[in-house]
Image 1: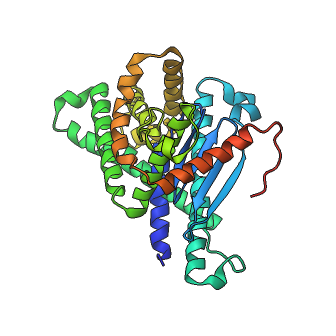
Image 2: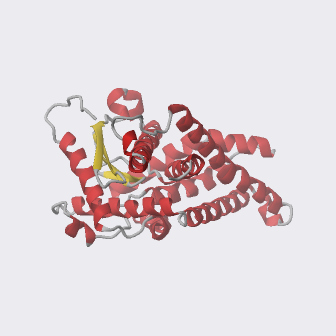
Amino acid sequence: MMTSWAWNLKLWIANLTVFLLKAGEEVLVGGQAVFEGVMMRSPKSYSIAVRKPDGTIVVKKDYLPRPADRQALWGYPLLRGIATLGQAFTLGVRALRFSTDQVLSGLVAKEDPSKGSAGAPREVSTGMMAMNIVVALSVFVLLFKFLPLVLATWLQDYFTVMQGPLAFSLVDGVIRLAIFILYIVLVSRIRDIRRIFEYHGAEHKVVFTYEAQEDLTVDNARKHSTFHPRCGTSFLMVVMLISAVVYAFIPFESLAMKLLSRIILIPVIAGISYEIIRFAALRKVTVLEWITLPGLWLQRVTTKQPDSAQLEIAIRALDEALVLENAAAPQPVAV
């Protein structure tokens, strides 16, 4: 059985990857890959389907009201983007924890049947999950905020053309993008993360099938592409472009203040990026297609061709979410 530290490492990598790839679009139908499963969302519900080591499928589903439905404040421009992205990340972490619990408990039961449903299954504790998220966010700041800033500052000492704030910010953004691509390529070589990328491909195929108004079957899903324009990687390209522009207006000279401002501005940039994508989508702005094109290219790494069993999981997750979405009146759901 896989050791605890190895699972913690992979859970940390998965959390960081989810944080990087979660899109801030207003959800129609979409989802996220998790360990041996898929989480699917409709506008007001979600469902997580996971295949355990013994081949059985477990499902967790519930209603998910939009932030603006719970508090009108989150419906205002900029704030709605922050709330949408925050909800997407929170749900993504919840889905990862559920899938990890199911896989780990299944492995325990497989090794020792006496520890099955009658025993205490191995799970990710709340404290462990919280620590995992803290570590993932800390590494995010280190890799994608601090390191690009340090490297750009170092290069500025050798190239006078970088003395201007815009040139410095653009170089900083290029370095950040290079680090991100290198990170994605490296983690894709980890077997369990690669499996997540296969489920990511399954998620996209099933969403395409739904959007084409075809029956949700494995055969129908198999013929569709794994590259979807509403994937979080496309949103990320917009975020990086907006970041380069916003950072150019930061008046601070010291490294510490530049770093602090970059951290503080994360939700602001997310909100601006959300509004730009929303505006472009409503008015069919062609330039957005060019901006998000690198995100589609990057999906060659973040999505892989799924097998039939993985497509089955993605279909089950979407089916369960749509059952709740189509329900006449929300009722508590037993998990």
